Image (cartoon, each protein chain N blue to C red):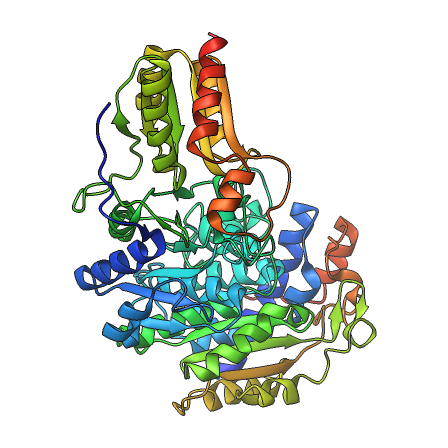
Length: 318
Length: 279
């Protein structure tokens, strides 16, 4: 299979910080807001270079979303950043009324998403945010897979007219996508071509999907196609259809619970247009817990080994 | 005719609009709208620098008004139509299927004059504060006005915004509260005791102005006082009476969300002079 080179582990939130700085240099309308988490969501460099365009909101996320909507109404391009749980679940009604229903050009910068936030435990780990954001009419949902892609997705989000939910994380993970590849919103990227099974993944699990494809090839003589669904909404139906037409089965992997995530997004579409055997690698109906990211991913089955096993199951059901 | 007589004339017509809109719709919120009619009339026909002909949602170079308490939609729609944002005939479509005049205001159908949706309470002050900061950063001298309810001020987000705005020195933000002492379940004093609003707002660092929301001289003076560019946002607390102008609706929360029958509508209209022609 195609070889992917990890140029060194990096956190995706730092990719956001780099992208935000670049977007800020490209367009003076770009602003950054945070709720007492400037360092955690990597807004330090932006705030240092553009102090007037950085807005500290304190530990008051609801007000921050409203202020961001107000800034957007006057023509600014605000990125409001916090931990994924506090910028979705805590402010769902604000995002619904002022951002989605209000059609404001607000970018939700959602850091520390998923279970890999790690040691802080389940209060801070959200595995439900994609479901909430997908449910909002008109909300674009982007889940990039590594540092480079998060940086490029941030730049693309700034140029996109409309509400965007941009999800990234805390742990250092392999950085392997091209450094300067412009991010295309709405595109699913085919990382490896195959014919036996489609591995459809997003976020941190894309690297695990590539690892799974390697295991499948080396140990089982299975050629897996690996798709990086970096934009979950709108879904790249054409690319998915072409892949499923070829492979006839899929395993979907995400760091999110089954309810409302990438798995149900793809399955819901496929049930109508491309029904085929599918297996899911995702969180079940339960909360996370404290632990290192690696411990948690293994304990919840969100790893290459499980993806490979599920792929074999899907192939067996063809 | 003096300016104040003119405002009184408009206010009477706006009150007729409110009663007739809600009666035709057979649902809606007449009480609060009648109570804040004089303030909203003064705002749109005296205080604000705005031009319906060149209006855009960005409101560059113009003042902007944000309704936070979205159930006050009837008075909002009436003053917008009477200002020339859209035809007054459209007021007859309030709450009807396919109407731009949704039960609570929205931007989906691009109704001119509307900046944001409102309905879920407690959110408008934050949005207005963001707009005020946006205008300042863009070098736009326009002011941003926002109407909150006293009952609405039980929402925690109001106080998040109350903390944020003075810290960020948005002195082009003029908030005002419809201080009628009523909410759905009864007098505010019987619900949570939100009543000591002057001290609350002053302690958060706002310039607090108290005024009589049914005396145009008092209303205009309050707005005038709110113009100072002193680094602090302004909160005008307008003492109002819910249902003001219609004797059987006045001073009670019972008409918060209830439409008058045809007979009640006629009884109400008999108390309100038709000054500018009904829609």
